[in-house]
Structures are given as C-alpha cells and as structure tokens.
Image (cartoon, rainbow, N blue to C red; front, side):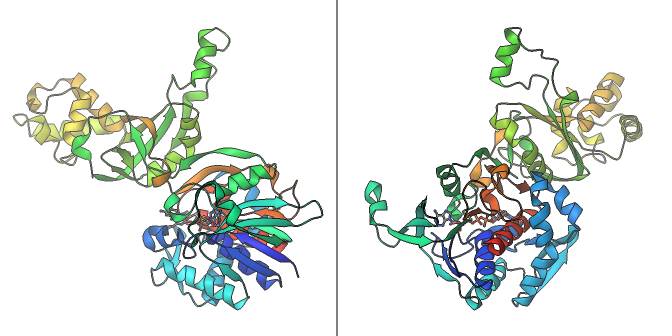
Length: 447
Ligand SMILES: Cc1cc2nc3c(=O)[nH]c(=O)nc-3n(C[C@H](O)[C@H](O)[C@H](O)COP(=O)(O)OP(=O)(O)OC[C@H]3O[C@@H](n4cnc5c(N)ncnc54)[C@H](O)[C@@H]3O)c2cc1C
C-alpha cells in the first residue's frame, strides 16, 4: 500500500482519488475550497453535462488539442463507464439531444454527491480548506507536499512557513486550469509542473465569447439567431507583429499564408449577440480554434450566413419576389418576411441602403449588396472575454511530458497529472468532463 496525495477535488481529482483508494492505496485528497467539486456545480448551467454518450471516434473528433493523447485513457474509461459509475453510485442518469448525458435529477450536485459517496466507501481522506503550496521530489524517492490550512489566517511571505509537510509515495496533480478562477482553478498545477522540470504550453481562454471591432449592431444586442452558419478565416493581414516586421524587411513572403486562411465552416447552429460582441454555441466552438492565434497576435474574421439554405442567386430571387407587391413600401418594411426586425437596420446599413428608401428606387446593384450583407455579415475579432467567461483553458502541461497510459510524468516517476491541467481540451457537449474522468481514472489506476 502506498501513500498517495491527490491535489484538487474537482472532477479529475475525485475520480483519481476514488480509483487509487479502491486499488488499495492510502489516499489523501487535498482541496483548497470549502467543498469538493465547486466547478462541477456550475457545469451544464447547473445540470452537469457529465459526458457525451457517443462512440469513441466521435469523442476523439471532438477533442481540439492533442486528441491522440486520449486514445489509451479514453478507451480504458469510456463515457459508458462513467454512466455506469454514476448509476452504481446511486445517481440516475439520462441522455439528451446530441448524446449529452446529465443526472436524471438535473442537479449537478448529484454528480458530486455520487463521487463523494464512492470516495467515502473506498476510504479516501479528504482535507478541505487546505492549499498545496509546493511539491518537492525527494532524492530517495517519494515527495514532500507543503500544505497550508486556509482556516488559519496567515498571509504574505510567512504563510508557507506555517504550513505542514506531508509525505507521499506518489502525487496526482488535478488542479484544473485557469478558467472561472472563483472555483479554485488558479493555475497552481502549471507551477508544480514547471518546478518538476516539465514543459507547459502557453495557456489561453477557450470555449469563450468573442469581442469584435464592429459597433454597428446595437439593435442586435440580446438577439439569438438560430439556423445560421459561421465561417472563420484568418484575415489577409493576419500576421503577428514579428511576422509583419519580417515581411517589411523583405525576409518573408506575405503570400506564404495558410490557403484561404479558412479555419472553420460550421453546420447550421446558434449564435448570440451581446453588448460586447458575440457568444452562443457556434462562437464558443470558433473560440477554441482561434484562441491560441489571438494570443499570438493573429487576426480573424467571422462571416455569418443568415440564410445558409439559399444560394446568393436564390436569395436574390426571393428578395425580388418580396419586392414585387411592395413597390411603394420602404425597404425596411418590405424585408419583413425575410429578416427579423432587429436584423433589418443592421443589414441595410451594411448594404449601404437607407431604410426609408422606397422599394421601387432600389437598384440591382443595391439589391446584390443586400444579398451580400445577408450571406456575409462580417465581424472582426478583437479578442476573447477572458478566463472569467471561458469554459475551458487551452494549453497546459505538454502531453509529450506525460505517459498517455498512466498520466505519469516521464521525467519524474511518481508524479502524475490529470484533467484540465493537461494540454488537452475539447468542444462543449460533455467531452471536457470525460477527459477529466478518463485521465483521473488512468492516474488512479496506474499509481
Ligand atoms: C461554466 C462552466 C461550465 C462547464 N460545463 C461543462 C459541461 O457541462 N460539460 C463538460 O464536459 N465540461 C464543462 N465544463 C468544463 C469542466 O468543468 C472542466 O473541464 C472540468 O471541471 C475540469 O476538471 P478538473 O478536475 O481538471 O479541474 P477543476 O474542476 O478546475 O478542479 C480543480 C480543483 O483543484 C483545486 N485546486 C487548485 N489548486 C489547488 C491547490 N494548490 N491546492 C489544493 N487544491 C487546489 C481547485 O480548488 C479545484 O477544486 C464547464 C466549465 C465551466 C467553467
């Protein structure tokens, strides 16, 4: 029996602690919050979309960063295994649209309670309000883990001096990423990894609303559009400041860019306009593909097609039909059947047509501009809304540093990493929690 310390009582940590304890180890789970699974409570809008009941290929295809890293642990503990785990722990589950799995009660707290029950049964000791400050690897093997009791009010540079030193044969770091820091995810695991000599890929907020340069869409704030498509491109001048300098000095060709700069072409989906920019499922997916580039200073444009079911030609015919019986109407009213009222002023502005223009005065050229504005409503991304609004962190402990079967650091035997702290992230739909369950299970099994 080994002494195992698991750092972080989120999804990955609870799964790792339970698995290690049920394999006979003496497990201590250390969590700095006053309760376990603080982030789980807010997942799936409080309902916890705890996994996606899809086949393995679909799971892998929904992982944005380093999908291949998940081949082994994802197969060893699948979404069906997680459903079975919760059912066995007394938490009934249900599957909804898009294979999204939830607790039948619609209460995220039931997922945490089920994990707590399982940990109790298997004998995990839980220390709440306890923060790990430092992990030291000992030359003879094993680790000392410096912890601070958060109930004691020491602060400042002497705080660590008041901490206790715990001994462990193995340590599993499950400290999460940087998103929603109020839930306890403050990036401590990256520091632990760097202290152990591991490389950490630069982080950026992902599955996150985007801010845009345009300000001409006030009428649309709060409006949600369904059945539209989104194309994302790197802008033609999408070079970093360093690259631009190289081009200016004649050391690099500006034509050497990714073909068309195409990043994403979506299926019909939903998008939301907010006071700062754009949000909704399509935008969150787009953010996952561009957040790293944005951090590097690249530029992207979002092209919304408001009528993806119609080609430009078909849309023009449709507008002509709508205009036929409305020659004396103002164009803003004649578009009533085609576009919701909030969209009309924005589209007309983009097409350069005054809303009060009589339909009979609209030229063919203006009509084609109208078609263009409907099929290509363009916004230029200025950034993300940051970690306070990001569902997930992109980046983290480089997967090349970690054995994908065991989650053990290749250069530091006995030190394991699982969950969001790793450089693995996925789209929405339950995939990110499944990454936490699978990697946590792998670490708990291997330890
Ligand atoms: C609003 C929101 C909604 C989401 N909804 C979904 C969803 O429906 N489905 C889905 O699949 N994913 C969802 N996610 C993503 C999902 O929550 C994460 O992928 C998952 O929680 C990561 O689990 P983790 O255990 O790796 O990290 P976390 O859940 O962040 O847990 C890390 C824990 O470590 C503790 N900790 C950190 N540092 C220390 C330290 N030094 N000492 C002691 N303890 C420490 C923290 O307090 C925290 O409790 C959502 C995320 C957010 C923000």
